[in-house]
Length: 112
Length: 108
Image (tube, rainbow over all chains, first blue to last red; front, side):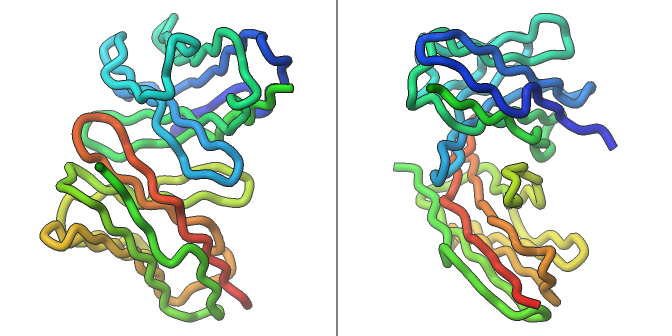
């Protein structure tokens, strides 16, 4: 069964460094999402992406964040200059049309 | 304000018991999702509902649009059902608003 994959599973970085989190959505899906979950808190929406552009973003998704679908298969989330409070689990998700979303296994980001 | 509330926060039950987890939301929605999150952190989509009822194996999800309420039921619960169950609601376009989750523990 097709699934959403994410790499790396765990990323450790120093504060102020740039990180890129990678996702490979299910191949015929059209809508792509990033979410984050700070330890012990609820999942939060970051951004949705459709037709090669951001369709909606939350107040969390400020200028430090950007998303890209560089080659038609990968979907990336870049954090330009990481802060301690960016430490969280980041989930990618995708969906076809009006269907439910399929989530990736997550990338745990630790900012030191 | 668009809010999602779940109850209970924690639920412990004996194997075989019938489980109900509730979700209430503040305003009209376009869709409601029930998700399962295992201890390792991965999230699995169980159901997406906009009306009525859906069933998959031992899981049943219902939604009452007028009352702004949804329930997730598990029949004949099993220890492998132990997980966090999350209600997430789409109030408008793409953004999902998540509840805080219900931590379910099934004791053998």
